[in-house]
Length: 609
Image 1 (cartoon, rainbow, N blue to C red):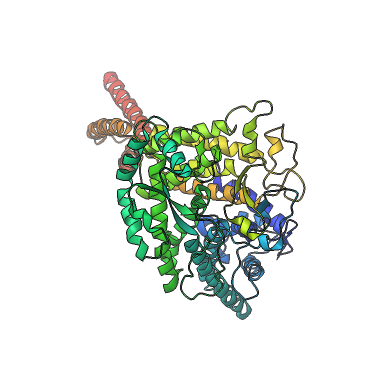
Image 2: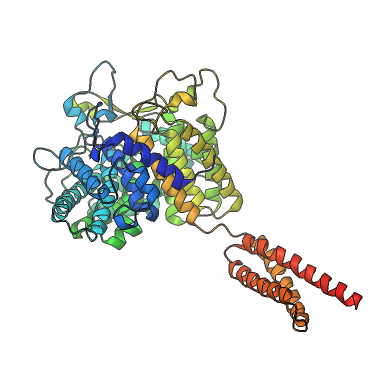
């Protein structure tokens, strides 16, 4: 199934608008209880394409295209859509604000109790989580950009007042989310002889090297990164001084929430005490990386969306962003012959868990690092094979067997204990059910990065297979028609009915926006085809010059028109030669055939004379 970003985005917009708006008014439908994560994901289903894809812009009503208006007719008319979106966003900001007027980042029903028979308490549902911090960064930046453009197109006083209120609330929430991300970052230092140390050594050495050899290699490979962390001790990163000891192992990244005893950042109000253990999770690290990179996007910088304080916070987050990418990318590729990442499934060191989902999250960090380095080398090619294996093991591109345990990756999903959450009154878990959507997102990102024709072709074919799998899983009837997720459609063994998942729906939106960026790139240039096209054009140019000598003698009008057409097509083919050699080749071929036809006709005419 070919990915058609415009058509598929419109289909999802139509379904989201039908589900969430009634006569222009936003309907929360919070049957599962409030979750700032789910609410932000739902709003981003509309706002993310509207701010990332020029053709889907809604901040300039006069330029909104007709098919967009038809898809969003439940939201309002051309002039009503922006104010109605502002009203929905304002409701979100008010709803997720505490009694002290500071933003809240409740995980809500996304939290699960370790004992299903024990209900989630109100206090536990109100706990902040990295998913909410990261999603809020993306939502707030999209909102600020939307408002900055839209306010120049309307003169209505009441709309300008609504814009001013929303801008202030959004900026406050953005600052709070950035501070919370800073306070959720952690560096965990541990001894090589500890249980966690032995697990990390086994992971890195894959039982092919002695512990001593692995330790020496770790010390050498992470020396520069360790030095950067030590230097960062004076730049706000809380870490044990034992990190200076090269015999100690360490991990860095994001915990599930604000870590216990995390210091306050500046004098910004509303910074709750943290309860999370200082345990970095690869899942929450990926989530944080996705949000933080939006702080440095071209759109954020061009529109000047950050104030001075936010710019300072962004720089502090960028340091942590780079540290985490470098650390996990190096761990994933540790050693020589076989990467730890290639040894599926990935085993976490802190919580002793293993799953293909964790392999996918580590691969996602590697993709982040490859994008940062613009790597198009062997690292990328090897990552392609990992993505193909993860799709197969998740039964996305292969047949499901009877009572296949791989279905558990999708439903009920992968459960992850939240270390330190017992301090809230009982241990909590986080459930990940977006395996297919995450795999599609990373596959599309890799395809956009690849400059190797074979690798990109494999990635595109894989992306189309994953997308077809996901597209079939849309809910076919009921409240969430056209949205996700109904796993029983592709896995008949699953008896559960459809369930609304804004997490999967929003990630599919992200994938389609990324696919649009992929298709807007220039196609990969083939050196071999470029050389062949150049030789064909050289021959065609020579024959055309030769034919011009003859054309000057005759007075045949059709021959003169044909010569002008040939000259125009040759000029066009030469302009395309460097960037699109295959197109230049295709243009040159009929020109050569036409020149040969002209030559034969001239030769035949000469013989008759």
